[in-house]
Structure formats: C-alpha cells, structure tokens
Length: 465
Image (cartoon, rainbow, N blue to C red):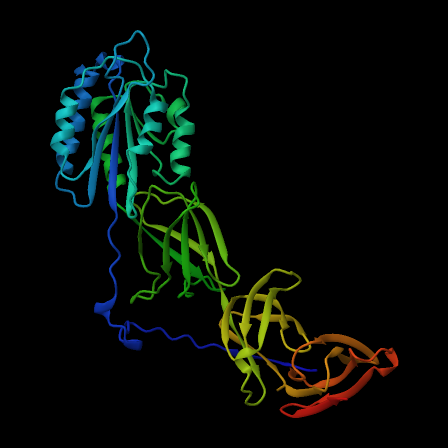
C-alpha cells in the first residue's frame, strides 16, 4: 500500500471586475435584500414624580415637548413604525397600583401625530412599575419576519414595585423579541440601577436630554460599517470567498450571513450592520474560526481580523478510475478524532494552514498522517489505482475478507451471509485472503480460504465452491 504527497505553489490572481452572467445568472436576476422595518416602542414614565420641577419647567412638560420635537423629525422616515406605552398615568398614588401601564398608541406607520397628541394629554398620577411595563411590551411587538424591535425607556426614577427590570430586559433579548433597550434617565443619575436594563444615558439637563434622545434615535435608525479581514500568514487580508455568520451574542439567533468578498480596490468589502447588537462571529473555513462578543462602535468603521491563512488539499488517484467520485476521505486535525470534513477523491478543498490526518474510506481503510497544508500551496495526496475482486459463491454462508500484512490477517470486510451470490469489491492494491463457510455445512473443516493479490486497475475473479 502506498501514496504520494506533492506540493504546488498556488498563484493568486485578482480581478478588478465582477462577472454576473456565468451559468445564466444575470445581474438583473439577483434578488435585493429587503430593508428591515425598525419598530420603536417608547416606554414613557408618567408617574407622580414627573410633576417635579426640573430646569425650566415641570419634568412632564419638558419630556413631552422634547420627545415631541424628536417625533416631528421622524415623521418622514421610511421603514419606521412607532408605538407608545405609558406607565403610572391611570391610577393615583396612594394607593400603589403596580399594574398601571397601557399601550396607548400601537405600532403603525405615520402615527407621529397620534403619539404626540396622546403625550400631550398625559397627567402624572401613580407609581413606577418599570419591570411590569417592560414585560407587557412583549405583546406590543406583533410577529414580524423582517423587523428590528427597539425599546426606548424614558424615566425619572427606578423600579418601585419590587420587580426586576434587568431580568425582564434579559428575557426580551434572549427570546429575540427586542434588541438591547435604550434608557434615558431624567434628572438624577440612576445608572447603577438601570445600566443592566439597557444602554443608559443620563440626562442631567434639558440639553443633555435632547442630546441623549438624538443619539439614541441615530443609533436606533442607522446601521454602521465594518469589515472582516481574513488574514493570510503574512498578515495581509487576502483570503476571501467564505461564508461568515453573525449571531446575536445574547439570544444566539442568526442575524446575518455574508459571503466574504474582496472589492474592486483589493480590500475586504464594507458591511453595513446593526450597531445595537453584540455579535458572535463564525467564519466557515475548515476548520471554522470563531470570535465572540464583538461590539460594533456606532458611527465608526470597525475592522474585525481573523487569522485565516489557507492552502488547498487535492485528492487524486493514479490513472483514470471511473469510481473516483465514490471514494471519500475523512479529514481530521492531527492527533484529534473530530471529523472536520469528508472529502471526495477527485476534488480540491481549502483548509486552514496546519497539519491534518486523513483516513481514506476504501477497502482497506488507508490512514495518512501528518499531511501539511501551507499558505497558498496545493498539497496533493495521490494513492494508487484500485483493482476489483469479484467473489462468487454458490450458497449463502459466513465469511470475511482480510488483508495479509506481515503474516498477520487484518479484518476489513464481512461478506453478506444471505444476499447476492456475486459481489464486486473495489480494493486498494495488496495481498488479501477470503475465508468462507456455507451455512449448509455443519463442520468447521469445510471452511474455504483463498489468497489473492490485487493489482492497480485489474480485476480478479474468485469462486468459493
């Protein structure tokens, strides 16, 4: 049994244009990815404390006015729906009513005027059930296949009803109902209590409140840019054409799949992605690469590097063999048992630079250890052309095929005991022995054995009579 390993240096060629008409696919036929609808739910504090004086006016009046200004700026934004949930506005305190929340304006397009009008009619009355209000928000977001769900909580206080708004927020994110919420704290800095609910913005003044609202809306509506650099061994972002999956770090759900590309300037393509999500990224090389808890800076270009140097592994047989495509090989990291890939002979596959062990799934199994895959090289594994053994028998029975190796018999195959009387086995070159007894023979001494040799490309016939 033998094989041969050859290495060829790969040649990289970069094209400064894209070809779209290959295999009958035209540029016009490419399907556009629909723009997601952004749904913003304002959860608004109308508890009794909003009657308090702050800066130039009452907190409620300032919040109504400044939020109304922001709403005016959003009335012509496409792919945007908004809703308003209020708490602490229906029943006076005391007594404390911890169920005091209501969806005042449901999601809809062009409903800015409705939200502004309802805001203007609110009168602070009750307590602050933040956790309960957030939990009710779950039902506010009706099912949608292509929506970004965002909560903006505007409050001047902290939880007063014993609930856990942080846990509710985690539940909403874990179930993929909403992205990480925004929280704007009016007056006092409540970051210690509310940081865990979402991204917290302290508003110590009217100016700070306006700025916080504008930043939150900008981040909620605008994607930002990133690029993934798949670095070769010299540190250049030259690797490409592999799928990248972006998962939501919190919920584990798939957010994006991108096939990595190099643009016409020779650089990794720029991705427009949602900055509100922390990502776990998998690059589907063989073996795959992972990077967890990747944060995208809103409004800034983020570069995400991976060491992804790769080379090619070619599997081939000597000569012209018609069953080439049926011969497969298990590929594993050197010294490990996990299967990375099952590659067909007659194919070439990219792998990360490294050392691999191969197991050819022929008869017998052929193990080839410590195969080195190097940057931009092609490593070719060549094994000899197999031959065929045609085994004929005139009855059902019990038998096995063995490889003769240094005077030892190594089992490689059991003959079917109740199926075809003629069997053709594709075997790698070598010495073999078949041992067989008819099931109608009642004594072991009637066992038949035949030794034979398989030569590349030749067929041998055995009769077990």
